[in-house]
Amino acid sequence: YGKGPGVDRSGDVLRHANGAGTAPFGGVLALAGDDPASKSSTVTSGCEYAFADLEIPLLDPADVGEVLEYGVKGIALSRFSGLWVGLKCVAETMDATMSLTVDPAAFATVAPDIALPPGGLHIRLKDAALPIEERVRHHKLPAALEFARANNLNPVIWNAPHPRFGIAVRGKAWSTLKQALADAGITPDLARMMGLVIWKPGLVWPLDALAARDFARGLDTILVVED
Image (cartoon, rainbow, N blue to C red; front, side):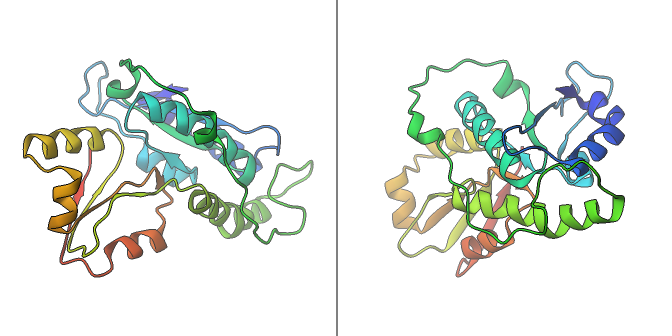
């Protein structure tokens, strides 16, 4: 775990550790504490650019329930892909409480069937810089995307038979958007009639370009809501 300055300070360690990889029965979840309003920090912070630069997949939970869900699935993603996995943490999800009904089936994951490079995706005894780079970019990150697709980490959560207006939203901004829609009197049934669809990526980096195109296809307008 590290807050914004700690993520910055640990970049070299994170890069090397992510390149070396994880074990099939190990897995690493790196929790990054963000302070975008500089409430208790000397600078504003957001971990997205840091994790993208480090080539570490990043999950962005919307609430306490998703912190638990993405935590469990993030470990599974790390074990499958051989990469570290980041989890974005903000005050709205960390300094909050919820009453949850936990369904173990909702936390189960499946491992997609993909072609593996020689020696697989995981940490090995002897490795070198160029093979590490090749494996991360050409095998491990694509494996992370395949895992996200197989486990529906980037769902369309409101759909419509004749979609024409789309909203893409992630993380805590989804909770804000839900409240805004409720304040405007837009229910899921009304949204379907209006042709409103909502896409909520949970794996925000690497972004699934195929899922984004599927969501956008045929829409007249797309609104992107960020935190």
